[in-house]
Length: 277
Image 1 (cartoon, rainbow, N blue to C red):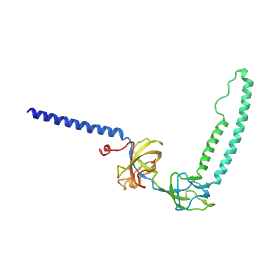
Image 2: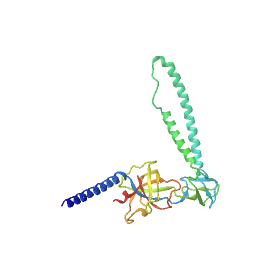
Image 3: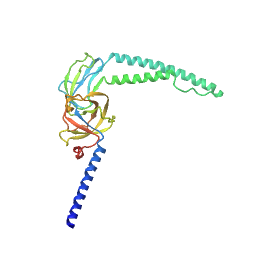
């Protein structure tokens, strides 16, 4: 009888121990997996185009050529953009001259009236607002001009060159096609009913859906502000269309993934807890 009681106690405490372990795992799973969605490794082929008509000034590569990171592929030009930059620059310089003149006059007036105890003028004038607006516009236009220099972000191979130097390429037409030597980005899709807060710079764990040994930590480049249709490859039932937000994630060089591979994206490394569902 005593032996039976001891065995019952052992069995009881064994069940309690197992229950505690399972509960702890479930709690950890719920606490750690705050973000989890699927994605596809970006295809290696990249089409180079621009959203405005451009003149091809210089082409520095030919089909089949392999180039390294930060290689200057193309030099483009948009005459309308150059004209706009010159126009805004002249207008800004004119306003700045007017501002300096008015400011010198104001300072002189305040010095003369200082004895009367009059306060210095404060706040923003109309000319201040105009100068600020033109400065921002000029900064934007200069960044657009920088985009006329096409420089590679990673080693790649030139697949096709569709224009010659001196020709004009229409908006959104393929000027050149290149293919990366290795995957560099992932496009993930967060279902519209999931309220994940993701910002540029956030770190996320990227793991192959078919080989848990292939994994890296990536960095969020952008998180979409509008809904797009989830690709059929990530939709368990293509007959029902799903919508979500697109998240672009950069992955480090030397990663183990293949182009177009499906991956699982989460806020932490997925191990045994991932399989307790």
